[in-house]
Image (cartoon, rainbow, N blue to C red; front, side):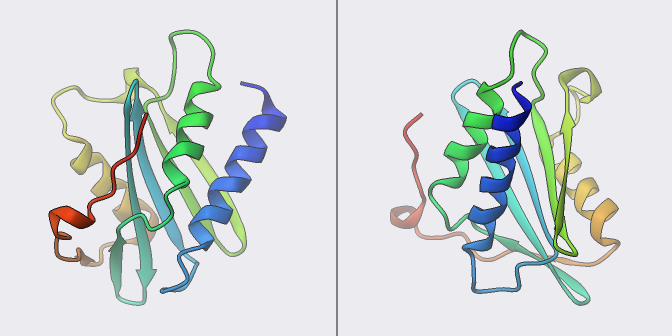
Length: 139
């Protein structure tokens, strides 16, 4: 992966996450799962004694994630990533297939990531949007 291009995309991901101005920008955790023709992003915001799950509100975010994922060369690609924004900085951790238990669901890994970064706090999930409001992306 070309480091300058990857760094630019990582900065762009942070800018896109900042466009969600309804809640404080920091701290924010993006947990993303990517594969061929599949992008799943989950956004969590720490709000005092609870964690808020946010539906992605910026349509360009999955495309930036896909661009970053597709920059990888060869077959040894990361499949999931953690992107944490805290104290004006971001840190990224890539999770490769050999570190993923095939019997474990992504939801379990995602919740473990939230626990690791924000501590044991309840996660508040919003109600499901009506089917007409679910975002669809062309891949």
